[in-house]
Length: 345
Image 1: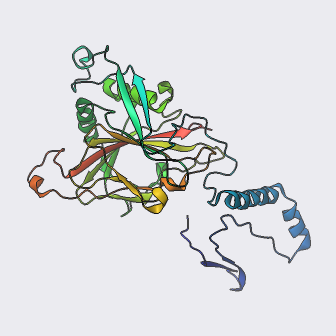
Image 2: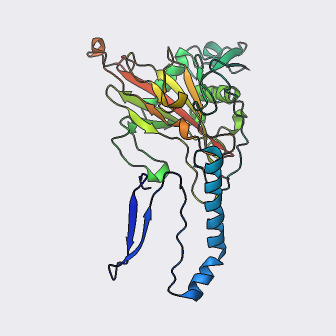
Image 3: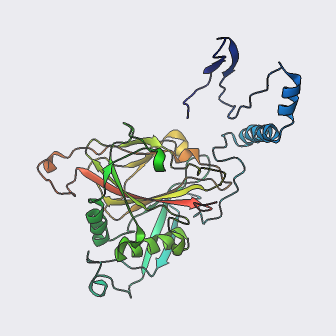
């Protein structure tokens, strides 16, 4: 991946002769470039111009140009990927609220082996998703879910997460690397790791309008990522969407960001491109709340406006001598990433 800008010129030089082979100057309205074959050998040139690979590249080039001309923003997903098939909650105006009923009730104490005491099965929940940034040119689709988890469920994640977190990496899978853009600690929790995590995944499925049985690594979901930010730590603006390797069309469709510990100062999730570039900063008022946002547009393109950051956790001096995990100077969150159409296709 190369960072570039309008007017940036790349020069390609023959390594044997040192002669300039070709130069390309980047333009803000051009997002895909096909190199033309050399004129030195007409037979080779003609073979290239008629090859399936070249013709497909030119089709992609035309698509990129036409998409930008029509929409005013570039196509950022894999070429040819279809519209998403998973549920996407409407976000038509600020404050729009969807209420979802779920039978997967709260755990009221962190004793996963004592469901009779800690998990009343007869208490259905009615939970809200409220629009904090709405669709269209003003910003990404962002919702706040204020009471998605109970105190006991947060305690459970905190207890398990404290045993698995280590220095954060940037990137996915084996391609991850350390970066000053992301200063935190991360770890992973599987849904089958405890009855409480299993209940949470089932509740998440209801809230997202998805079949909870598909929220597994082999289908729609990654494992639950636990992230710890200490005071002064942050994650610079970035996108969550990224297509899978190979020829599949799967990519991250949504992020459900769970606030397990809410810091007193800072620690917001910000969307700098929301509301026409004015931005929006979101932090649930108490632990157990969540932020949901979609990384994909309804046509299958990645949503550039979903650019977001984990803002710096600021120091609250009254907690300087408190060594507990939930001491006001830390932020603990979890990321649940859902892929469309799934992680395999």
